[in-house]
Image (cartoon, rainbow, N blue to C red):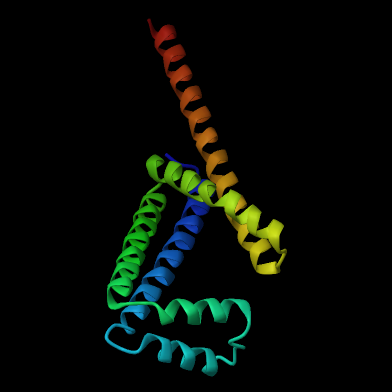
Length: 169
């Protein structure tokens, strides 16, 4: 039986992973709206309506990318978004149900992003990048801590069971 405090922590991480999956899935569906349409024109309208400066770095990258996109690219990106979202939903389900495989998956999949996030913070420190890194490090640290605590508890339980059997014999 899992500790109720640990269960609350796992469920919080599960909700966060489900939220990430939902955002990526919605983005994937958003990409599908560009199929069969002039993607560059729609991108220009989006940048204009959101009052972004098209000469700035990210809007410029977005506009340049959308000028070269094809329907095949959009389908591939939407498919990747669906696959990624499915992984997040599976992970969220496993964490909600306190499955050990999901704990390992959450710890390892979160740890994969840490070097990239550190590099991004190193290149240019912003509150968003620092927050993303901090949240991810907290989740990874919590998952690894939980895995070691679970292992320690099982070892103690096994040792206690063996001692009780010795006494009864």
